[in-house]
Length: 401
Image (cartoon, rainbow, N blue to C red; front, side, top):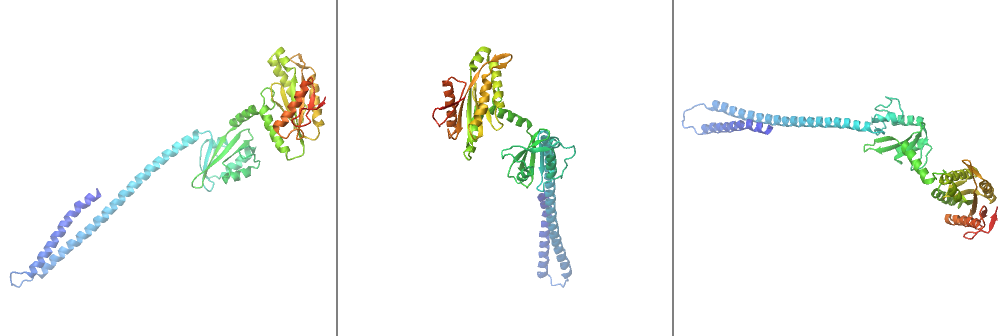
């Protein structure tokens, strides 16, 4: 539009300029081609005419430059107005997006906060104060990250386990966290909750911290872990956990001098109890047997139920065989006595096979086989006894009652 206006005004100026040049040319022609010799003074009118022509030309030039500047100014004004409209539109969209972001953040169950490169708080959601158990209004724009960590120190009881291991020094964790050596860590709180704190760096050097309450997830993990490692009936370790424990124990003892003893225990006449009184009575008997075994071992010993009526006990740090035989004989004596459950007298017994590491075996499989061979020998000889293996991968030769 600006260019069209400029051309409409400039056309008359061009015509005026052409006419002025024509007038000037005519005046010059008259001076040099006079028809009459009459002495007439044309110099003054011609000079005035020339001045008028050049004045018109000068005015046309000035008017042209003025129009150019006016058009340039119009373009600048139009550009500024356009930029202002774009800025207002972007600002309006930004405010709209910011409101939407606030709504989304406030619907999340986590506590979320964003910090600038100098660790001052920029943005947060309403759930931050709730999940950190902070008084309402405590979190404000501009507070330092250390304000939140200081409060977290006050409500925490210890550092929790994570994929990087257990770190009891919370400040060591925080330093590693801020250096981005670790991306998250966990904290156990005094109110029995567990928080997971994760950080995501931003391009400008700031970072976003998310506080998640993972209490229910940790409880579910503990239940699943317990189900994977322990027998649901007796509460003892299961076969998988027993094997894992034995392998780990042997790996440790290969570096030391102490002996590891393994005892395999098989209940006698247990099938008769199930057949006569039913499986509920058999289950109750297994629970009682588990209590008897646990009450006769040390805190460092490890007992497991590895089959229907089969149990295993690990005795670490054993220097001589009698350290194992004394508690096992107590167990055997107790199990051969009548056990009363629900006013019913039940009579069972037990057979026990023992193997020692490294005397009888050098691996998990061979140690179990040596103890199993000893147990088989007891059953061959009438049950209700204890056998100790004497050599790896050979049948037992010694019987100890």
